[in-house]
Length: 148
Image (cartoon, one colour):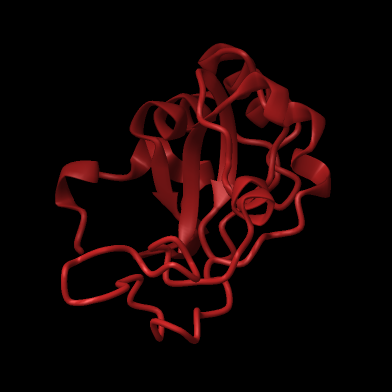
């Protein structure tokens, strides 16, 4: 669980707040039982086109986050955006310092810079002083010591 920096298209800014957490899995194709295979020759299942599910192209497109050069913070539990989209890393840092993420309070500048540079931070960290929020303390995390 944590926060990620995602690189999305700048036009995702127009719809990110209304993005309703599309499913990570679509209903399974009953013909191929989700395998996507049509026959022993390795051909795609004719019912689902090899996807293994019965989603339409429109549903698939709506579930994909458009990749691009813009910057946005996502939380990893539900896989959803928690900041607007910004054209540059510096604009995102400024937003984190001024506003936080909507879920997280404003960041110290050093923490915002470290978080954006690393691209990830845990939700919480246990320290000798107690539990602290990870992204707001990203400048104090030793990323080379991450445990998988």
